[in-house]
Structures are given as structure tokens and as C-alpha cells.
Amino acid sequence: MHISLETFLILAIILTGFVGLATAKNIIRSIICLNITQTGIILLFLSLVFKPGMLPPVMPTPLAAMVDPTPQALVITTIVIGAAITSLALMMSIKIFHHYGTLDWNDLSRREG
Image (tube, rainbow, N blue to C red; front, side, top):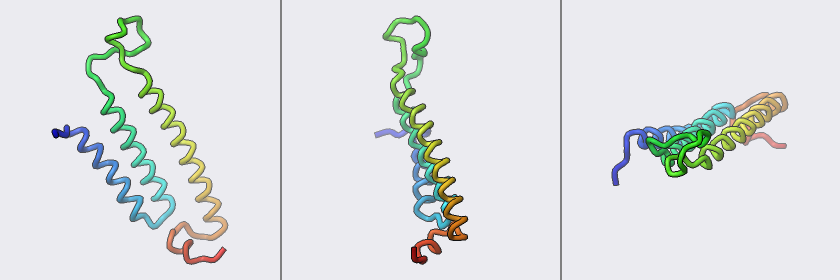
């Protein structure tokens, strides 16, 4: 099986996000690594459905030459949901910092209640 350079780099981005998520000791770093992983997965999905020479579905062209708009709609939905989750996670991290005074996962896990 042959893996293109673009696919290899995208998989490296996803792996970087997962490693960062597993090793992050700060909540903000965890949120950033989650966003890196999400971006890599979106890029992987788009690279898998890419077909060179296809035309956008907004122009009156033959159906055989049009690209399928479903993956694009799914990716846009994923980006919007990801932005909402990121903003919610950042707001929750602000509340955690105001309540506990730290954003370190280890300090938070050692506290009671």
C-alpha cells in the first residue's frame, strides 16, 4: 500500500495532537491539542474525498463532472461544532481557574470536591 506524502504529513499532525493531548499537564494545552487533532482529521477526510479535475456543484455542469457536496457540508458542520466545543471548553477552564486557582490537571486531581 502506497501512502502519499500529504497523507503521511496529515497523519503526523493527528499523531502530534494525540501525543500532546496525552502528555499535556495544562487544561489550555489539552484544548489546543484537541483542536490540532480535529484539524488533522478534517484534513485527512478532505484529502480522502478529493478528486482532481472536478467542478464545484454551484455551476450548471454535467453531473459526472461535479464534486459531491456532502463531504464539504460535513466538514463545515464539524468546524462549527468544533469551534463551539472549543469556546465552551475555554469558558469552563476560566471557571475552573477562578474556582481552584490552577489549570494543572495533577493539582486538580489531588483536590477534594
